[in-house]
Length: 154
Image (cartoon, rainbow, N blue to C red; front, top):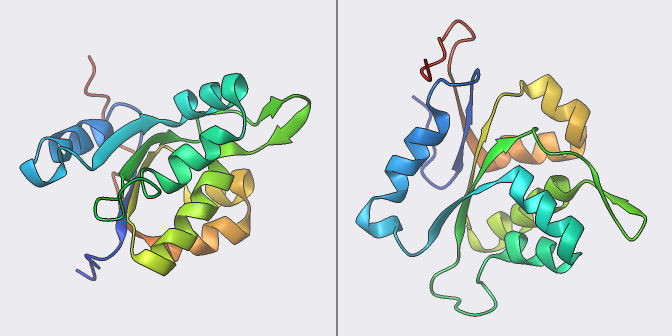
């Protein structure tokens, strides 16, 4: 199937098809309990607006600076639902910055990142730039639900 176990997962699909639920199941595996966190991209941007640029470091590097033996693996949930934000008047595409740093960690140390999103590859390029889109091809195995998948939240 062409799956690379050294890459993360980018799980794309329509609203309500179970993307987040699958990662919550993964979070419950015994090997993932300490080093795996699912974080909403909207939460990260909200923290950034309140706390500033330290939040970029928190989610970019995880707990690498504290414990090199157990780096944090993140699943950034609902990429594309967050907005570009400002901190003291400075515009910042928070998730683009976080993901670019995560790419560097992926290349240097093999740190994996996972993502859920409703966006297509074209929409990711428009919102985050082709530079990040290109790096994401290297970082992730892409899995997608068909657009005809029905909302399971009924």
